[in-house]
Length: 545
Image 1 (cartoon, rainbow, N blue to C red):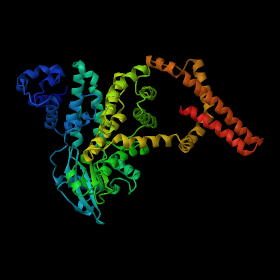
Image 2: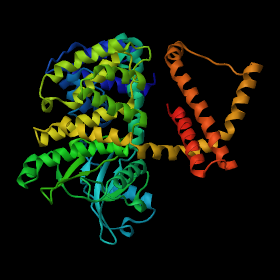
Image 3: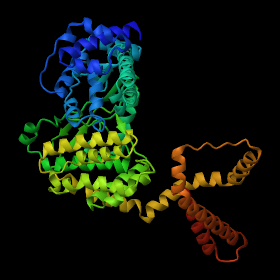
Image 4: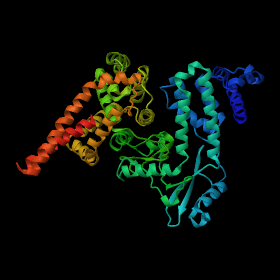
């Protein structure tokens, strides 16, 4: 352990002790082999029993500084790993820190633009509009009169973050090594996930690209407005966006005073979320109230305004399909299908017994469905589902965790705006329409067209690849390693592989027959094309299974 880490850890212990959290330091072996030093600190002998552990932990993280605040915020999105009461308390952490001097922000900008700021902007306000742990935002005006906001990274913030991330890694390693109970929480993985997220937020060009993509996804008439990015003024440590004005979504009194249709606003939030997740497959994953404003200029048709695009999420098409199918199965209380979908999607271990998982899901869901749907929390329902799946060795899916976090934010926001919001009623028609459209002939044809170029490029190489593989096997150069889980998968996939081979064989035969008919003109061209296309469809479907 490095000396600077040791001193930082001692400081962390002092803060924990001040909030009556000495046992965390003792049980996690905070200082590792040097933990005997704890008895020399006054906090070791002084207990302060105030409030519950969640409140004390939140206050301690706020005292430890902005990086630990952000870590607590990230940790709050993992209620599958934390007790629910602590996760809820950590979600209250506020990322509020004093601003750094505006003159310093000016210097950073001038270094980035390589010229005096007066030559770049017609006006620049040194007093920031907002300040957070990583960056702060200033108002400015371009030479042509357009108003913008400029987000500037804090000086040396990368060094501060790296120092505290190193300390968090050291703490996680110590906890995992010395505290057996911590291993089920996988502290090293949690810190690694946090490090990736926080480092991504340090690249403001990445945030600019996220904002530009979201803006393209929503036309000007959509219920979500995304500010325009001014690329000429963006750097890795500077983000320039159109300045937008709106009512903070948490200011319910002002929204009501302006006559905003709260029911429509809440419903628009849910629809916008599902549109991002299923239609665009690109969703704003940090939609807490501080990042959302409302354009109330048309009270009967209000729109959301989004800011802060550092964290976005995507799903694979497979995850999209299984997630939608799972939710629809829940609406129908078809727990058997839910269990089967979890196994087929790979969200739980392949050796999971479907009947056992079905029983566990039914145990969780039946008490929930005894209440009116509008009183059921969609987000907490999804959380309980993931907790059940964890009992069956479900691997942590980062994209699903981001989705769950965003859904909890959206649902909480919607219920705050309109307490009678029935998120299930809004979601079900959307999911049914999406699934129907996905399975429509036009959608299947579009996916086939997208696959054709790759298939056409790879088909000529297939015989050579097969021959090369056979030669390597014959010469003993090809070795196949199969772990224990692979044996389990093997039995499960034999039938599907057999069906895939049958489809490939039949499809290839029809494709060749159709091409033969076209080449020798034994039948009208329409018949040849029809046979060839049927064969091609079978081949493609075998690859997509």
